[in-house]
Image (cartoon, rainbow, N blue to C red; front, top):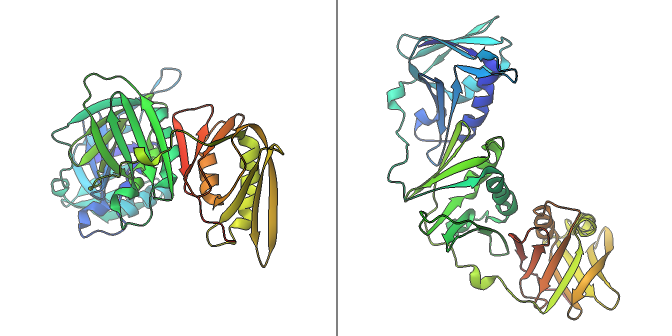
Length: 387
């Protein structure tokens, strides 16, 4: 193989595939990037067996002025598995606009720029594991912006503790024309529901690792308005622009959260999102000194406001007042994690609007609803107040 490439364009593609490279692995070939010439340009693949990211670099691109710019010149086609970490670092540090990659003596790789050259030991491309999907069971398309929103509004609620593996992922459950995407660590829950009609799509219930979706959120290109999703028994594939992102699915049954989410409330309180977020942000400063990050919340309808408090015995205390815009029900005092509350409010993107709290008692899970986006639901389990 002997080719010349635009270095900056190559860096952009390596930024994607290197996200899938393993930190540790018993399969040494997975520490490399599968680098292959095609009729269209160059194909690059990185994988840790759980996540696989594939992208491609075309021979030419068109500028805004419809002028063709050559990115790749292929003198001799071929393929090689290049040590990923070192390859990426070398390409970033080279100062040349165009670089040359040349294989020789079977699997040795020469990388040449304007002022220097580097040699790496590669591996045969034939030895790279086959990781393509087979036996696709479900196939559908989501708006890319919607997929990114799903990740942003749920990812922070996945469990970190792996004692219940299913909870370390986000559950995608489709049925009756509704896709419910849910994350919970048993102490809080985030859910986004989307309605879309697709008569060809059968019901499914799969759980995608949180790490996979976190990386997907950084990888998908919003310039491509649609992302195609394919699901097999144990894998899911997202195809967007010139990047495909494949992940294993988590095993085990995801808990049925429907019964856990209240649909009616004894107390409802509407407040300004901006005012509440600012108050919680300040209260959390002191709450962080407490092991549970606890903030105490008192709803006082007769005074038309909410009082939020946090304190650290050796430092001091904070008290914030938030005006109530609308309220039904009686007064209430409770406590919860200020960091959970802050995460939930961050997931509500439109800070110029309002949010509604729904309560059913001081120790029952309460819900935060985005008044501008009914698809977004956040739930938090209170903590017991010490007398």
